[in-house]
Image (tube, rainbow, N blue to C red; front, top):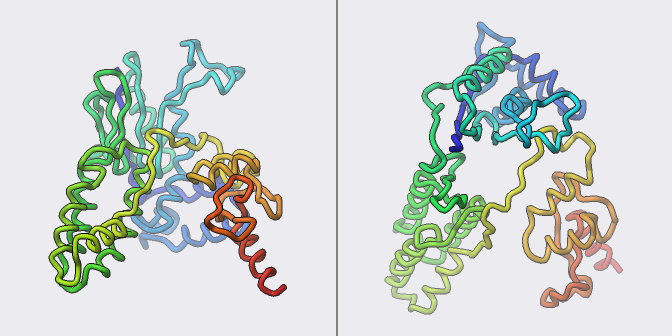
Length: 343
């Protein structure tokens, strides 16, 4: 039976030396992070700790915990791992986001032994495990992680849906807008659209069908509220509801994890270009694949941080033929249209 374990680490006594030694970044970025560290969080320990819950806190935790994924690993054929073992034959069954982590265990794995090795790893970096938030559970019972609920069903298939707590928090925000008497239906639709779009984008790699996750009941309630206004009829109310609840395509379990040793600053442009192209959907994704993740104007690779636009060659935004759509950098797109206006 697979057994995931979630861990969360306190970073109030994290070692600054560990962070700087493990940081892979340009010199300017290193200086900025070093100054953030030296700002201090406790007057008695100026050389330790980072701000918990701050904007930079997840980044610092991610740097300090780099390598913890390799604590639990095994050979795919059950053999002993040696320095000569190929990386493709090694399985590291763990997923980590900042200081939140899940480790997938096999039936023969000793959970207590792995937990002890994790404690040793964290002690060297001035951290410790939060025992209240660490638990061992069976995947058939399901577990929550980063706003999602994961579960292995009785038929052996893996299922991922938004967690109950995440959905309740989202529903509370929607109800606050819908039931607010200070706004009209048009303003409510404008305020709901980015809220719904953001929630659906976050969960676009989950199973989003069904009455709850498809937001059918919330949509119906919103329609009834909009339709009560004297200036609206059922047709205008339905149009506003469609505007307030934009559709986002989803693809269950299609997200690709970043490889353990990869960094946006490691110089591996082909890897990051190909991975970032998977973050886009529809015509943009197809155009990037045709162009080998390169810009259709300047020919340079799409690197992390680049914003990709879809350019229509003939200027007709209703012409969605394959030959008429190319993926370009945002800056190249803007410069191209600026030069056309001047000419």
